Length: 81
Image 1 (cartoon, rainbow, N blue to C red):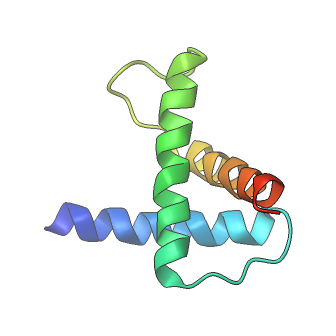
Image 2: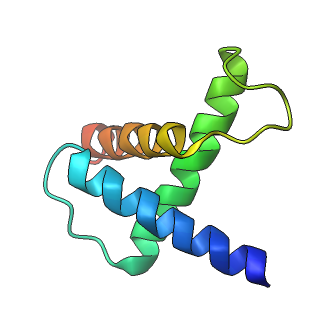
């Protein structure tokens, strides 16, 4: 249970940073921000493994997670229109 709460909190912080740095106006609520942060972390983890930046079984770091969330926001902006 504690791991889920920590994941939500870290996802929220990553999502907030991505919204602040990322493109366009961002007016999502708490849960969408958490979702963007968590999905950005997953994108960074698997993308980093595909590029050879991370070994299998190793998660992306905090900066990588923020970059993954920014990429996600940019893709949503690009294809959301």
